[in-house]
Length: 515
Image: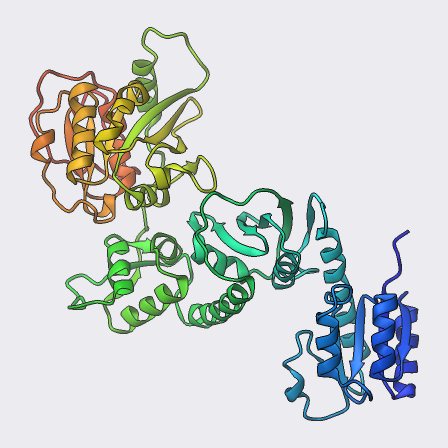
Protein backbone atom coordinates (compact mmCIF):
# COMPACT_ATOMS: atom_id res chain seq x y z
CA UNK A 1 0.00 0.00 0.00
CA UNK A 2 1.40 3.39 -0.99
CA UNK A 3 2.23 5.89 1.71
CA UNK A 4 -0.34 8.68 2.24
CA UNK A 5 0.62 12.09 0.95
CA UNK A 6 1.39 14.71 3.60
CA UNK A 7 0.30 18.35 3.42
CA UNK A 8 1.36 21.07 5.87
CA UNK A 9 -1.06 23.98 6.34
CA UNK A 10 0.58 27.06 7.85
CA UNK A 11 -2.18 29.58 8.50
CA UNK A 12 -3.17 31.70 11.52
CA UNK A 13 -6.80 31.59 10.29
CA UNK A 14 -7.94 28.49 12.17
CA UNK A 15 -11.40 28.41 10.56
CA UNK A 16 -9.96 28.40 7.02
CA UNK A 17 -7.41 25.75 8.01
CA UNK A 18 -10.11 23.47 9.50
CA UNK A 19 -12.28 23.73 6.40
CA UNK A 20 -9.39 22.87 4.11
CA UNK A 21 -8.20 20.07 6.42
CA UNK A 22 -11.57 18.31 6.19
CA UNK A 23 -11.51 18.47 2.39
CA UNK A 24 -7.95 17.14 2.22
CA UNK A 25 -8.55 14.27 4.66
CA UNK A 26 -11.60 13.25 2.65
CA UNK A 27 -9.26 12.78 -0.30
CA UNK A 28 -6.86 10.65 1.75
CA UNK A 29 -4.20 13.24 2.62
CA UNK A 30 -2.43 13.43 5.97
CA UNK A 31 -2.69 17.02 7.18
CA UNK A 32 -0.33 18.78 9.59
CA UNK A 33 -1.00 22.26 10.95
CA UNK A 34 1.15 25.19 12.04
CA UNK A 35 -0.21 28.56 13.25
CA UNK A 36 2.92 30.57 12.44
CA UNK A 37 6.12 30.51 10.38
CA UNK A 38 8.38 29.24 13.16
CA UNK A 39 6.20 26.20 13.88
CA UNK A 40 5.83 25.57 10.16
CA UNK A 41 9.61 25.48 9.76
CA UNK A 42 9.93 22.98 12.61
CA UNK A 43 7.28 20.66 11.12
CA UNK A 44 8.81 20.94 7.66
CA UNK A 45 12.24 19.84 8.92
CA UNK A 46 10.99 17.03 11.19
CA UNK A 47 8.08 15.63 9.14
CA UNK A 48 9.13 16.52 5.56
CA UNK A 49 5.64 17.08 4.06
CA UNK A 50 5.03 16.58 0.34
CA UNK A 51 3.47 20.05 -0.07
CA UNK A 52 3.26 23.16 2.12
CA UNK A 53 0.51 25.78 1.92
CA UNK A 54 1.93 28.85 3.66
CA UNK A 55 -0.31 31.84 4.28
CA UNK A 56 1.29 35.26 3.93
CA UNK A 57 -0.37 36.32 7.22
CA UNK A 58 1.86 33.90 9.20
CA UNK A 59 3.90 35.66 11.89
CA UNK A 60 7.50 35.20 13.10
CA UNK A 61 8.76 34.15 9.66
CA UNK A 62 7.33 35.73 6.51
CA UNK A 63 6.70 33.77 3.34
CA UNK A 64 9.79 34.93 1.42
CA UNK A 65 12.18 34.07 4.27
CA UNK A 66 10.39 30.77 4.91
CA UNK A 67 10.89 29.63 1.30
CA UNK A 68 14.51 30.83 1.32
CA UNK A 69 15.30 28.86 4.49
CA UNK A 70 13.78 25.67 3.08
CA UNK A 71 15.73 26.00 -0.15
CA UNK A 72 19.06 26.30 1.67
CA UNK A 73 18.47 23.12 3.72
CA UNK A 74 19.32 19.90 1.81
CA UNK A 75 16.55 18.06 3.69
CA UNK A 76 13.81 20.50 2.69
CA UNK A 77 15.03 22.13 -0.54
CA UNK A 78 12.74 20.00 -2.70
CA UNK A 79 9.47 20.68 -0.77
CA UNK A 80 7.11 22.80 -2.92
CA UNK A 81 5.60 25.80 -1.13
CA UNK A 82 2.37 27.46 -2.33
CA UNK A 83 1.62 30.85 -0.81
CA UNK A 84 -2.01 31.55 0.18
CA UNK A 85 -3.46 35.02 0.61
CA UNK A 86 -6.65 36.93 1.28
CA UNK A 87 -5.31 40.01 -0.47
CA UNK A 88 -6.92 41.16 -3.70
CA UNK A 89 -3.46 42.16 -4.91
CA UNK A 90 -2.08 38.64 -5.38
CA UNK A 91 0.01 39.60 -8.42
CA UNK A 92 2.81 40.84 -6.17
CA UNK A 93 3.27 37.24 -4.95
CA UNK A 94 3.63 35.69 -8.41
CA UNK A 95 7.40 35.55 -8.02
CA UNK A 96 7.06 32.45 -5.84
CA UNK A 97 7.96 29.35 -7.85
CA UNK A 98 4.79 27.38 -7.10
CA UNK A 99 2.45 30.34 -7.43
CA UNK A 100 -0.38 31.63 -5.24
CA UNK A 101 -3.80 30.38 -4.08
CA UNK A 102 -6.45 33.01 -3.45
CA UNK A 103 -8.81 32.98 -0.45
CA UNK A 104 -11.60 32.12 -0.09
CA UNK A 105 -10.41 28.83 -1.54
CA UNK A 106 -11.83 27.16 -4.61
CA UNK A 107 -11.50 23.58 -3.32
CA UNK A 108 -11.23 22.08 -6.81
CA UNK A 109 -8.36 24.43 -7.62
CA UNK A 110 -6.60 23.71 -4.32
CA UNK A 111 -6.94 19.94 -4.63
CA UNK A 112 -5.78 20.02 -8.24
CA UNK A 113 -2.71 22.09 -7.37
CA UNK A 114 -1.77 19.84 -4.45
CA UNK A 115 -2.24 16.69 -6.52
CA UNK A 116 -0.06 18.12 -9.27
CA UNK A 117 2.74 19.05 -6.85
CA UNK A 118 2.58 15.68 -5.10
CA UNK A 119 2.91 13.85 -8.41
CA UNK A 120 5.93 15.97 -9.24
CA UNK A 121 7.50 15.27 -5.85
CA UNK A 122 6.90 11.53 -6.25
CA UNK A 123 8.58 11.60 -9.64
CA UNK A 124 11.52 13.47 -8.12
CA UNK A 125 11.91 10.81 -5.42
CA UNK A 126 11.94 8.08 -8.04
CA UNK A 127 14.69 9.90 -9.90
CA UNK A 128 16.99 10.17 -6.90
CA UNK A 129 19.81 7.76 -6.33
CA UNK A 130 20.26 4.89 -8.77
CA UNK A 131 16.72 4.64 -10.09
CA UNK A 132 16.91 2.92 -13.44
CA UNK A 133 14.00 4.45 -15.23
CA UNK A 134 10.90 6.55 -14.76
CA UNK A 135 8.00 6.82 -17.17
CA UNK A 136 4.60 8.44 -17.19
CA UNK A 137 2.21 10.83 -18.89
CA UNK A 138 2.83 14.50 -19.59
CA UNK A 139 -0.80 15.19 -18.67
CA UNK A 140 0.02 14.11 -15.09
CA UNK A 141 3.58 15.45 -14.91
CA UNK A 142 4.13 18.39 -17.31
CA UNK A 143 7.41 18.40 -19.20
CA UNK A 144 8.60 21.64 -17.60
CA UNK A 145 8.20 20.14 -14.13
CA UNK A 146 9.91 16.92 -15.18
CA UNK A 147 12.90 18.80 -16.59
CA UNK A 148 13.16 20.87 -13.41
CA UNK A 149 13.24 17.64 -11.40
CA UNK A 150 15.99 16.19 -13.58
CA UNK A 151 17.95 19.42 -13.24
CA UNK A 152 17.46 19.59 -9.47
CA UNK A 153 18.74 16.01 -9.07
CA UNK A 154 21.57 16.55 -11.58
CA UNK A 155 20.56 13.46 -13.52
CA UNK A 156 22.36 12.17 -16.61
CA UNK A 157 20.57 10.15 -19.26
CA UNK A 158 18.07 10.25 -22.10
CA UNK A 159 14.47 11.46 -21.86
CA UNK A 160 12.29 9.95 -24.60
CA UNK A 161 8.96 11.56 -25.52
CA UNK A 162 6.16 10.21 -27.71
CA UNK A 163 2.77 11.47 -28.83
CA UNK A 164 0.95 9.50 -31.52
CA UNK A 165 3.41 9.11 -34.38
CA UNK A 166 5.67 11.87 -33.07
CA UNK A 167 8.90 11.01 -31.26
CA UNK A 168 11.47 13.12 -29.50
CA UNK A 169 14.40 12.74 -27.17
CA UNK A 170 16.38 15.03 -24.91
CA UNK A 171 19.86 14.14 -23.65
CA UNK A 172 20.78 15.47 -20.22
CA UNK A 173 24.15 15.60 -18.46
CA UNK A 174 24.32 16.53 -14.77
CA UNK A 175 20.92 18.19 -15.03
CA UNK A 176 21.75 20.27 -18.13
CA UNK A 177 20.37 19.72 -21.65
CA UNK A 178 23.18 18.80 -24.05
CA UNK A 179 21.33 17.58 -27.16
CA UNK A 180 17.83 16.94 -28.45
CA UNK A 181 16.11 15.38 -31.45
CA UNK A 182 12.58 15.83 -32.75
CA UNK A 183 11.98 13.95 -35.99
CA UNK A 184 14.81 14.93 -38.34
CA UNK A 185 15.73 18.04 -36.36
CA UNK A 186 18.29 18.15 -33.57
CA UNK A 187 20.07 20.55 -31.23
CA UNK A 188 18.43 23.63 -29.71
CA UNK A 189 15.84 23.80 -32.48
CA UNK A 190 14.56 20.35 -31.51
CA UNK A 191 14.69 21.12 -27.79
CA UNK A 192 12.52 24.22 -28.17
CA UNK A 193 9.97 22.16 -30.11
CA UNK A 194 9.85 19.50 -27.41
CA UNK A 195 9.46 22.00 -24.56
CA UNK A 196 6.19 23.05 -26.20
CA UNK A 197 4.69 19.56 -25.82
CA UNK A 198 1.65 19.42 -23.54
CA UNK A 199 0.49 15.85 -24.17
CA UNK A 200 2.08 12.45 -24.66
CA UNK A 201 4.18 10.05 -22.61
CA UNK A 202 7.75 10.14 -21.37
CA UNK A 203 10.45 7.71 -20.25
CA UNK A 204 13.77 8.65 -18.64
CA UNK A 205 16.64 6.18 -18.84
CA UNK A 206 19.88 6.96 -16.98
CA UNK A 207 23.03 6.54 -19.03
CA UNK A 208 26.15 8.29 -20.30
CA UNK A 209 25.75 11.62 -22.09
CA UNK A 210 26.40 11.86 -25.87
CA UNK A 211 29.97 12.42 -26.94
CA UNK A 212 29.34 15.95 -28.19
CA UNK A 213 27.18 18.62 -26.58
CA UNK A 214 25.14 20.63 -29.08
CA UNK A 215 23.30 22.72 -26.47
CA UNK A 216 25.04 25.14 -24.11
CA UNK A 217 22.30 26.34 -21.75
CA UNK A 218 21.25 25.76 -18.18
CA UNK A 219 17.96 23.93 -17.76
CA UNK A 220 16.30 27.06 -16.35
CA UNK A 221 17.44 29.16 -19.31
CA UNK A 222 16.32 26.47 -21.76
CA UNK A 223 12.87 26.25 -20.19
CA UNK A 224 12.33 30.02 -20.14
CA UNK A 225 13.42 30.44 -23.75
CA UNK A 226 11.57 27.31 -24.86
CA UNK A 227 8.28 28.43 -23.32
CA UNK A 228 8.69 31.90 -24.83
CA UNK A 229 9.30 30.43 -28.28
CA UNK A 230 6.41 28.00 -27.85
CA UNK A 231 4.00 30.85 -27.06
CA UNK A 232 5.26 33.01 -29.96
CA UNK A 233 5.24 30.03 -32.33
CA UNK A 234 1.63 29.31 -31.49
CA UNK A 235 0.70 32.93 -32.07
CA UNK A 236 2.36 33.00 -35.51
CA UNK A 237 0.98 29.62 -36.56
CA UNK A 238 -2.52 30.86 -35.84
CA UNK A 239 -2.16 33.45 -38.63
CA UNK A 240 -0.26 31.22 -41.11
CA UNK A 241 -1.46 28.47 -43.46
CA UNK A 242 -1.70 24.93 -41.99
CA UNK A 243 1.53 22.97 -41.61
CA UNK A 244 0.52 20.76 -44.55
CA UNK A 245 -0.01 23.70 -46.91
CA UNK A 246 2.46 23.82 -49.81
CA UNK A 247 4.31 27.11 -50.23
CA UNK A 248 6.18 28.28 -53.31
CA UNK A 249 8.00 31.33 -54.63
CA UNK A 250 5.82 33.68 -56.68
CA UNK A 251 6.83 33.29 -60.35
CA UNK A 252 8.86 36.30 -61.49
CA UNK A 253 8.38 37.81 -58.05
CA UNK A 254 10.78 40.46 -56.79
CA UNK A 255 13.22 38.78 -54.39
CA UNK A 256 14.86 40.78 -51.57
CA UNK A 257 18.07 42.45 -52.75
CA UNK A 258 20.13 41.87 -49.60
CA UNK A 259 18.07 39.38 -47.56
CA UNK A 260 18.56 38.60 -43.90
CA UNK A 261 20.43 35.27 -43.39
CA UNK A 262 17.21 33.58 -42.22
CA UNK A 263 15.31 34.90 -45.24
CA UNK A 264 18.12 33.79 -47.54
CA UNK A 265 17.98 30.30 -46.07
CA UNK A 266 14.19 30.21 -46.43
CA UNK A 267 14.41 31.21 -50.10
CA UNK A 268 16.96 28.44 -50.66
CA UNK A 269 14.66 25.83 -49.11
CA UNK A 270 11.75 27.12 -51.21
CA UNK A 271 13.69 26.73 -54.45
CA UNK A 272 10.97 24.14 -55.06
CA UNK A 273 7.45 24.03 -53.58
CA UNK A 274 7.40 22.55 -50.07
CA UNK A 275 4.94 22.07 -47.26
CA UNK A 276 5.31 24.49 -44.36
CA UNK A 277 6.23 21.56 -42.10
CA UNK A 278 9.06 20.65 -44.52
CA UNK A 279 10.28 24.24 -44.56
CA UNK A 280 10.56 24.21 -40.78
CA UNK A 281 12.50 20.93 -40.84
CA UNK A 282 14.88 21.78 -43.68
CA UNK A 283 15.90 25.24 -42.52
CA UNK A 284 18.55 25.31 -39.80
CA UNK A 285 17.28 28.51 -38.18
CA UNK A 286 14.95 28.27 -35.14
CA UNK A 287 11.29 27.64 -35.96
CA UNK A 288 10.30 31.01 -34.55
CA UNK A 289 12.67 32.87 -36.91
CA UNK A 290 11.52 30.82 -39.91
CA UNK A 291 7.84 31.46 -39.14
CA UNK A 292 8.54 35.17 -38.82
CA UNK A 293 10.29 35.19 -42.20
CA UNK A 294 7.44 33.19 -43.80
CA UNK A 295 4.92 35.71 -42.44
CA UNK A 296 6.88 38.64 -43.87
CA UNK A 297 7.42 37.04 -47.31
CA UNK A 298 3.74 36.10 -47.59
CA UNK A 299 2.74 39.67 -46.76
CA UNK A 300 5.19 41.07 -49.34
CA UNK A 301 4.02 38.66 -52.04
CA UNK A 302 7.41 36.94 -52.42
CA UNK A 303 5.96 33.51 -51.61
CA UNK A 304 2.43 32.18 -51.98
CA UNK A 305 0.21 29.21 -51.27
CA UNK A 306 0.75 26.55 -53.91
CA UNK A 307 -2.00 24.27 -55.19
CA UNK A 308 0.27 21.44 -56.37
CA UNK A 309 2.14 18.79 -54.42
CA UNK A 310 5.27 19.54 -52.47
CA UNK A 311 7.47 16.64 -53.52
CA UNK A 312 7.41 13.72 -55.86
CA UNK A 313 5.20 10.93 -54.65
CA UNK A 314 4.98 7.25 -55.48
CA UNK A 315 7.57 4.46 -55.40
CA UNK A 316 11.17 5.31 -56.16
CA UNK A 317 11.38 2.40 -58.62
CA UNK A 318 8.69 0.36 -60.32
CA UNK A 319 8.41 -3.40 -59.77
CA UNK A 320 10.12 -4.22 -63.07
CA UNK A 321 12.98 -1.83 -62.27
CA UNK A 322 13.47 -3.32 -58.82
CA UNK A 323 13.58 -6.80 -60.36
CA UNK A 324 16.12 -5.73 -63.01
CA UNK A 325 18.40 -3.98 -60.52
CA UNK A 326 18.22 -6.83 -58.05
CA UNK A 327 18.99 -9.36 -60.77
CA UNK A 328 22.10 -7.40 -61.79
CA UNK A 329 23.34 -7.07 -58.23
CA UNK A 330 22.66 -10.74 -57.46
CA UNK A 331 24.42 -12.04 -60.57
CA UNK A 332 26.56 -15.02 -59.57
CA UNK A 333 25.44 -14.83 -55.93
CA UNK A 334 23.07 -17.08 -53.98
CA UNK A 335 19.48 -15.87 -53.77
CA UNK A 336 18.40 -13.92 -50.71
CA UNK A 337 15.08 -12.64 -49.47
CA UNK A 338 16.25 -9.02 -49.23
CA UNK A 339 19.30 -7.45 -50.81
CA UNK A 340 21.06 -4.46 -49.23
CA UNK A 341 22.93 -2.29 -51.73
CA UNK A 342 25.24 0.62 -51.01
CA UNK A 343 25.40 4.17 -52.44
CA UNK A 344 28.26 6.56 -51.71
CA UNK A 345 27.34 10.11 -50.72
CA UNK A 346 30.30 12.28 -51.75
CA UNK A 347 30.38 15.31 -49.49
CA UNK A 348 33.07 17.08 -47.55
CA UNK A 349 31.16 18.27 -44.50
CA UNK A 350 28.06 18.23 -42.33
CA UNK A 351 26.05 20.52 -44.64
CA UNK A 352 25.82 17.98 -47.46
CA UNK A 353 25.17 15.06 -45.12
CA UNK A 354 22.47 16.88 -43.18
CA UNK A 355 20.73 18.09 -46.33
CA UNK A 356 20.70 14.55 -47.65
CA UNK A 357 19.43 13.12 -44.35
CA UNK A 358 16.60 15.64 -44.16
CA UNK A 359 15.42 15.65 -47.77
CA UNK A 360 15.62 12.04 -48.95
CA UNK A 361 12.04 10.73 -48.59
CA UNK A 362 11.72 7.48 -46.65
CA UNK A 363 15.29 7.49 -45.31
CA UNK A 364 15.63 5.90 -41.87
CA UNK A 365 18.71 7.24 -40.10
CA UNK A 366 21.20 4.73 -38.72
CA UNK A 367 20.77 6.32 -35.28
CA UNK A 368 19.13 9.34 -33.71
CA UNK A 369 22.35 11.31 -34.32
CA UNK A 370 24.49 9.45 -36.91
CA UNK A 371 28.19 9.92 -36.23
CA UNK A 372 28.88 10.27 -39.96
CA UNK A 373 27.02 13.59 -39.99
CA UNK A 374 29.96 14.91 -38.00
CA UNK A 375 32.90 12.75 -39.10
CA UNK A 376 31.83 12.06 -42.72
CA UNK A 377 32.53 8.37 -42.14
CA UNK A 378 29.90 5.68 -41.72
CA UNK A 379 26.30 4.99 -42.66
CA UNK A 380 23.82 7.85 -42.86
CA UNK A 381 20.75 5.64 -43.07
CA UNK A 382 18.77 3.04 -45.02
CA UNK A 383 16.07 3.41 -47.66
CA UNK A 384 13.59 0.59 -48.29
CA UNK A 385 13.13 0.70 -52.08
CA UNK A 386 10.94 -2.41 -51.87
CA UNK A 387 10.52 -5.49 -49.69
CA UNK A 388 13.39 -7.19 -51.53
CA UNK A 389 15.72 -4.23 -52.12
CA UNK A 390 17.16 -1.85 -49.56
CA UNK A 391 19.85 0.79 -49.98
CA UNK A 392 22.37 2.01 -47.40
CA UNK A 393 23.79 5.50 -47.97
CA UNK A 394 27.37 5.78 -46.72
CA UNK A 395 30.11 8.39 -46.48
CA UNK A 396 33.89 8.34 -46.30
CA UNK A 397 36.08 11.36 -45.50
CA UNK A 398 37.03 13.21 -48.68
CA UNK A 399 40.40 14.28 -47.29
CA UNK A 400 43.44 12.85 -49.07
CA UNK A 401 44.67 11.33 -45.82
CA UNK A 402 41.61 9.07 -45.78
CA UNK A 403 42.28 7.62 -49.27
CA UNK A 404 43.38 4.21 -47.89
CA UNK A 405 39.82 3.80 -46.55
CA UNK A 406 38.09 4.43 -49.85
CA UNK A 407 38.61 1.15 -51.69
CA UNK A 408 37.87 -1.33 -48.87
CA UNK A 409 34.82 0.60 -47.67
CA UNK A 410 33.33 1.44 -51.08
CA UNK A 411 34.27 -1.63 -53.15
CA UNK A 412 30.71 -3.04 -53.10
CA UNK A 413 28.90 0.26 -53.79
CA UNK A 414 26.57 0.48 -56.80
CA UNK A 415 26.96 4.22 -57.42
CA UNK A 416 28.03 7.59 -56.08
CA UNK A 417 25.91 10.68 -55.40
CA UNK A 418 27.97 13.88 -55.53
CA UNK A 419 26.63 16.54 -53.15
CA UNK A 420 29.48 19.10 -53.31
CA UNK A 421 31.98 20.14 -55.98
CA UNK A 422 35.03 21.32 -54.03
CA UNK A 423 38.45 19.86 -54.89
CA UNK A 424 38.49 17.23 -52.14
CA UNK A 425 35.02 15.90 -52.96
CA UNK A 426 35.79 15.84 -56.69
CA UNK A 427 38.88 13.70 -56.02
CA UNK A 428 36.72 11.24 -54.08
CA UNK A 429 34.08 11.25 -56.82
CA UNK A 430 36.78 10.69 -59.48
CA UNK A 431 38.09 7.72 -57.51
CA UNK A 432 34.57 6.25 -57.43
CA UNK A 433 34.12 6.88 -61.16
CA UNK A 434 37.47 5.79 -62.61
CA UNK A 435 38.92 3.43 -60.01
CA UNK A 436 35.74 1.69 -58.91
CA UNK A 437 33.92 2.35 -62.24
CA UNK A 438 30.72 3.46 -60.47
CA UNK A 439 28.01 5.56 -62.15
CA UNK A 440 27.83 9.13 -60.83
CA UNK A 441 24.98 11.55 -60.32
CA UNK A 442 25.78 15.16 -59.44
CA UNK A 443 23.00 16.67 -57.31
CA UNK A 444 22.77 20.30 -58.40
CA UNK A 445 20.60 23.25 -57.39
CA UNK A 446 17.50 22.01 -55.54
CA UNK A 447 18.80 18.45 -55.15
CA UNK A 448 21.89 19.58 -53.22
CA UNK A 449 20.28 22.47 -51.39
CA UNK A 450 22.28 24.91 -53.44
CA UNK A 451 25.71 23.41 -52.62
CA UNK A 452 26.19 22.74 -56.35
CA UNK A 453 24.76 25.37 -58.70
CA UNK A 454 26.33 24.38 -62.04
CA UNK A 455 24.34 22.24 -64.47
CA UNK A 456 27.49 20.86 -66.13
CA UNK A 457 29.40 17.73 -65.27
CA UNK A 458 32.72 18.90 -63.75
CA UNK A 459 35.68 18.46 -66.09
CA UNK A 460 37.35 16.00 -63.70
CA UNK A 461 34.36 13.65 -63.92
CA UNK A 462 33.71 13.69 -67.66
CA UNK A 463 33.93 10.46 -69.67
CA UNK A 464 33.49 8.34 -66.52
CA UNK A 465 33.16 4.64 -67.46
CA UNK A 466 29.89 4.27 -65.54
CA UNK A 467 28.47 7.55 -66.77
CA UNK A 468 27.92 10.91 -65.09
CA UNK A 469 24.74 13.00 -64.99
CA UNK A 470 23.56 16.21 -63.39
CA UNK A 471 20.13 16.22 -61.73
CA UNK A 472 18.89 19.55 -60.47
CA UNK A 473 15.23 18.92 -59.67
CA UNK A 474 15.15 17.16 -56.29
CA UNK A 475 17.10 14.62 -54.30
CA UNK A 476 14.64 11.74 -54.83
CA UNK A 477 15.04 12.15 -58.61
CA UNK A 478 18.82 12.15 -58.23
CA UNK A 479 18.72 8.89 -56.27
CA UNK A 480 16.30 7.36 -58.75
CA UNK A 481 18.59 8.30 -61.65
CA UNK A 482 21.53 6.66 -59.88
CA UNK A 483 19.59 3.45 -59.26
CA UNK A 484 18.57 3.30 -62.92
CA UNK A 485 22.18 3.85 -63.97
CA UNK A 486 23.33 1.01 -61.72
CA UNK A 487 21.26 -1.43 -63.81
CA UNK A 488 23.69 -1.02 -66.72
CA UNK A 489 27.29 -2.30 -66.86
CA UNK A 490 30.00 0.37 -67.20
CA UNK A 491 31.29 1.19 -70.67
CA UNK A 492 34.86 2.12 -71.62
CA UNK A 493 33.80 5.65 -72.47
CA UNK A 494 30.56 7.63 -72.20
CA UNK A 495 29.94 11.20 -73.36
CA UNK A 496 28.93 13.85 -70.88
CA UNK A 497 25.18 14.16 -70.27
CA UNK A 498 22.96 16.57 -68.38
CA UNK A 499 19.70 15.04 -67.20
CA UNK A 500 16.56 16.09 -65.41
CA UNK A 501 14.65 12.86 -64.90
CA UNK A 502 10.85 12.64 -64.76
CA UNK A 503 9.20 12.86 -61.35
CA UNK A 504 9.18 9.65 -59.37
CA UNK A 505 5.41 9.41 -59.70
CA UNK A 506 5.53 9.12 -63.49
CA UNK A 507 5.73 5.70 -65.21
CA UNK A 508 9.20 4.20 -64.94
CA UNK A 509 11.59 4.45 -67.84
CA UNK A 510 12.28 1.22 -69.73
CA UNK A 511 15.25 -0.62 -68.31
CA UNK A 512 16.87 -0.57 -71.74
CA UNK A 513 17.17 3.24 -71.74
CA UNK A 514 20.81 4.15 -71.52
CA UNK A 515 22.00 6.30 -68.60
